[in-house]
Image 1 (cartoon, helix red, strand yellow):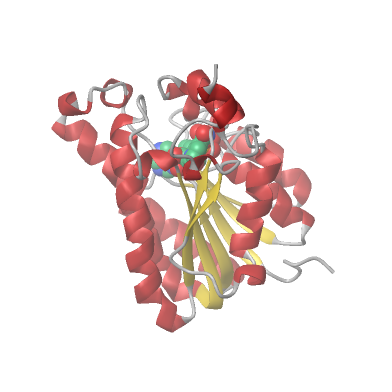
Image 2 (tube, rainbow, N blue to C red; image 1 turned 120 degrees about the vertical axis):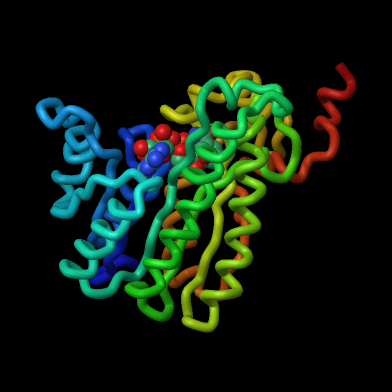
Length: 269
Ligand code: NAD
């Protein structure tokens, strides 16, 4: 019997088969979970690209609920939670795997980030977790788990990550406050800080290939992480296996974050 047999969840953030949310979802399906999904609303109803991409992935696994949602729109979020409540009643877990910054603001330097670009980046990448948590606590069962995705650029300066680093810092702090507030209700809140993976979002981050090279040479494991690595860890954090873990920022990055200097073999070159 799978770890998620009889469990239901809500997943935000599958854009395509490279999405981190999909890597985690695949593991959840393997363990028997049933899930509802959101996708960005399609601008042209004649060509529903977002919905179609999601449907192609999750329908063969038995998914029935695919709900359009732009997290900047409270009415979209209301609809998502109304639909999930009507269909499932309560849920066991929620995955938030969403981030965005306008390209002009993301490319830096940080001192040039526009007021509007900053607000939008924070709204989509951080405030969305808060507004989702407010609704989720109404339907998450005691023992439920919420998970979001972060990156080391929220703790240290990663050149090229720029305003998204500021967002991730705020996101990780938000996780701690939410964990404290929702803990008495039996709900856990954690973040998973993933190493670089090639996805739609990461293609917008400057110096991304340099980061991949650095992780493969400087991390303790001397390799980049895979979608499978992040999928397994995400599944653990959403499952009862992590029942004593809350407010944590769990690194899945081949250990890169512990290094204060390059490995000795690189220092001797
Ligand atoms: P992705 O592009 O596949 O996923 C980003 C998701 O955010 C997409 O599904 C997109 O539709 C959604 N999104 C953006 N704006 C939205 C809005 N207004 N309303 C609703 N949804 C919106 O890329 P990904 O790399 O899988 O990113 C998922 C998360 O993982 C992000 O938080 C990202 O910062 C984080 N992360 C990524 C990496 C990496 O290297 N890829 C590393 C660490 C953390």
